[in-house]
Image (tube, rainbow, N blue to C red; front, top):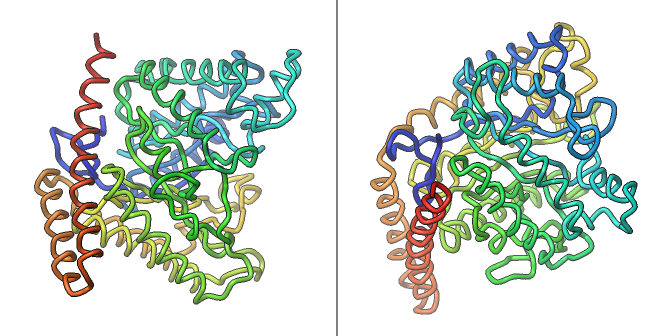
Amino acid sequence: MVAVDGTQFVVDCGRTIFFSGFNAYWLMMMAADPALRGAVATAFQQASAHGLNLARTWAFSDGGDQPLQSSPGVYNETMFQGLDFVIAEARRHGIYLLLCLTNNFDNFGGKRQYVRWARDAGHNLTAEDDFFTNTVVKSYFKNHVKTVLTRVNTLTGVAYKDDPTIFAWELMNEPRCYADPTGAMVQAWVEEMAPYVKRVDGRHLVTPGLEGFYGDGEHESKELNPWGIYYGTNYVATHRAAGVDFATIHLYPDVWLWGSTADEQATFFRNWTLSHIDATAAYLGMPLLVTEYGKFLWKEVGANKAQRNYFLDLVLDAIYASASRGGPLVGGAFWQLLLDGDIVAGMDNLRDGYEIILAEDSRAASIIGEHSEQLAALNGQDADVLCRRASSHRKTRLGNSLSCGGGDTLELLLRMVLACFVSLSRSISSFIVQNFILL
């Protein structure tokens, strides 16, 4: 099992592990058809060959034509066996899985489908954001959590909650809430759901699935949000919720700032990345992953491949810079991995302008492979030693800022102390929670 030690992910009694990953939401859907399982195996084989060690994918499909859950508590065994195959194949190729449990958006059902189910059962619900507050809807979601986590894999015989192939559970893909822009509604939902996941599965890590948008709470930097508006989440406060083990952000500067110049997007990227690294170190004391990043290419609309590859370099260099000095940003996953449509039938239908096909995009494949190799070279370090290195780095920055004035120096010093305190308190809390669960 992957665990957390301060701002680092660890395995094997405290040895660091860093993640170079990809998104492939379609894995379960493809694997549900035995004739197409070869595509899933090929995806994992290609990923492994390029040093990738993390796949983020869906463990949900709510209603619709290819459901995992066709109605509350009613499951499609064929689709579940597809997910069994995904987990078994990831295990065979040495790739961890970040499994997402539902969607903020309508794709594959998501929160709107849950609300529709409750409305069809006679409950008076008026908006899709009732997902976060309605007792009946929340009971539906908790049942889904329990069903997935306690599933026994038909191929390996291992319950999902006991399988170390699964790196972590993600509560929701990109939760947003326009009914409550302050973030309080999503905050309360995470505070209820994260501990519930831990009660069912006391071994795996949990993350809310945030994009990194700041809210109305303390230590939030709303002015850095795209266009400076609220999206109904709090980055700092929500990741502080009990049961949350690590933080996430997404990176889509060209789409979030559509119509802006390349210089404006580059400035946003730098500010967004550095702000979250600093906030995570200072106020959360946990690891940080960029669980989605990409640049839009679609029929000459948006970027070209050279611009996309430059963006890949920027993101991956930022991850490595943090990871190599013991910072909290310790990995990422690009959106999205696809295969050649001429080889795998139906794959072209999954193109969305962000796809990277490793076999036909040699430059992108080279960038990703080289970065994976760099990160892999950092694996196996003692997390405590790395933490001290990060502390030394922050002290160096503090020393270099002495001429900036006492107020700036004091703030940096307080942030360092707070980061140490947060890390220590989270470790103690995690120990208590885990042992309580075991008892």
